[in-house]
Every structure is written in structure tokens, then in C-alpha cells.
Length: 415
Image (cartoon, rainbow, N blue to C red):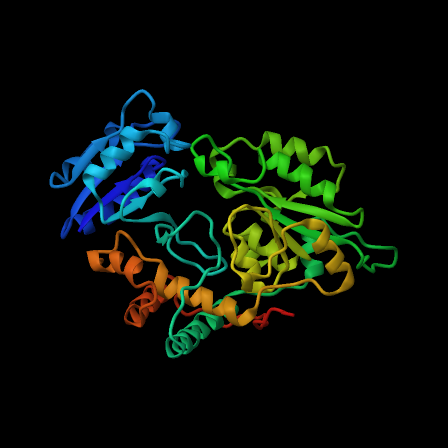
């Protein structure tokens, strides 16, 4: 096969720690071409990546260093010379790290997007990757024969039981108190009419060109819009994306929170450490477990809601599978919450999707035993029982048996 890696928004870390392994694997058996721009706003490659290039002399490297290379990160679909060059390569398969779907749509052959493989609350490797047909299409399951679906459901149940065993469900009032959200009445009774709506924020940083698909101009704009849609008997609780906390600027978000006079609160690193158990390690997971509902954009946190049976609004132009039962606006969600009829994900399909994703879709691109067929087959044959045992072993290596907990696992409540 002739395989093209089109990498306009690759970061040096992604290149060195994830994609080079996939390039090396595929180039061992196929003709491989790489199209990548020079480093700009944290994306592209520089001299620091030269050792990787020198170690792969049989790969065809094409540095896209023309004066218009910054536009590659946003929309290069009008660059006919670029399209003609790809046509001369004539790839059978293009693997993209691109925030622009218009340009790859003009490429010949099959196109897939290399995306993070995480599916919280399940713990997967930081480097695991999934090949997607488009950006941020959440929850879709390929068609499969009934006997394969039944076998997948059985395998998925083992994963589901393991996830449940690892989640310690602490009393909600403990979370509200420790997150400083308890609105108790006199006499110690909490006002049950108060709604806690969680919202994990998107990664905001100049290197994140995927933000162009966010439905809002910024996280601060998302906070203002959602807060205006919430009735007075609710509090919006937000969490920063961990990479924004680590590398970005959170001042605009913090200022937006302050403008809403206590109706918007931040579950931050400073008070996250006071929470119990798993909440101390993952603020968004803890928030999803204990809030009344969540609002997400393109965040992977939608899958936490699917696993825990939490109602969710998804504010995005990207599609979500029907089984997830997401809302597309906040007022409708609030009406259903108040009426006691809020929709949640279908549990059976949630289990099946996690089983499909973990056992079929994701792979470790730097695994020593990875072969070219292992990558290509995830495009040509997305559901294959022959890969389940290896995938389950990889999951078990990352999630060894745990000691019994003092808090018994509880099945999330579903409609």
C-alpha cells in the first residue's frame, strides 16, 4: 500500500511519542509519505525531531515550509497545488493529524483522523490512539453480525464490571460539602431544589487548532452562555482542562466565573485535593458522578456521563450517536430535570460502545509487537473478535486487580 501521513497540527510531543511509532510500523511493510509543516504555534516539527527523520531514511519526507504554511492548520482546501501534490502521491490510505476536515476530504483514497484513544472513566494508556472517520463524532458503533454483537456484549460486561469495581461512589452530600457547594438550610437539610450542573472546559492554548470546532469563541464565552440559560435554582460547576491548567492561561475563565456572583464555581486544583478517593485524582470524573447533569462541547468527558448515567447537554456541531440521548440545549434539560424525566444514555449500548472502543478501535502505536496489519485492519475491518484477547490483556496490564474497597461498587442509576 501507499500510505500518507498528513500532519499539519502535529505537536512535537505527539510526533515523537505517538506518531513516529506508527510511521515506523507501517514503513516496515508499505510505502510511506509524510507531509508536515515546520514548527509554528507549537505545531509542526523542528530540528529537535531530526533524529526521528534520520532513523527512517526509507520514508518519503515532504516538509510543507512554504510561506502559507500557517493556513494548513485552519483550512487549506483552496490550495490546489497541495491537493495536486497529494494526487501525485496517490495514497491508498491517509492518516491525518489535522484540525481541518475540508482539505483531507479532497484527497484520493481512504482518510482517517488520528485521535486520542481515551474513554473515561476507563483508564487507558496516555499514548493510545483511535482512527476516526471525522473529528469529534462520539459514540458510533459499526454494524456487526448479531452473533458478533452478542460476543462483544459479553466481553464488554467484563470491562464494565471492572470499571464499576474501581469507582467508589461516595455520598453526594460529602462531595458538595468538600467542593464548597453545600447549600444547606437551617437544621442541616440540603435544599434539594438546587441543581448542580457540571461543565468540563475545552483545552485552550495557541497550539490547539482543534478549538476552531468549538461552538463558542472561548471557554469564557461558553460559561456566559450556559450560565444565562440556567435558572436561579442552579449552580454551574466548571473544571479546567488539565492541559490548560498546566500550559495555558486561565485568567479569562477565572474572570468570567467572578462575573456571575457565585452562580458559577470552579472545581480547581486547590479544593480538588480535599475530595475523597478518586475525586482527588480526577475532578471532572468526581463532578460527573455527583452533579445533576453535565454540559459538554467536544470534550471526551461525554463518555463519563454515558458510563455513569448522567444526563448531558452536548453543544457541538459534531454528531453524537442516538443511544447517548444527549440534549442539544440547556433549557430542555432543565425542564426535564425538574419534571423528573431527564434522558440518559442507554446502558446496553453504552456497554457495547465501550467494548467496541477498547477492544477494537484503540491501539498502542509504540507497542513493540505492533504490526502494519494491526493498524490497517482497524480501517478495513473495524470489528474483529481476533483482536479482543490482546486488547483485553493490554487493558489488564494497565488496570491490575484491585484490593477490595470499603465502599461497595454501585450500579449507576439509569432511566
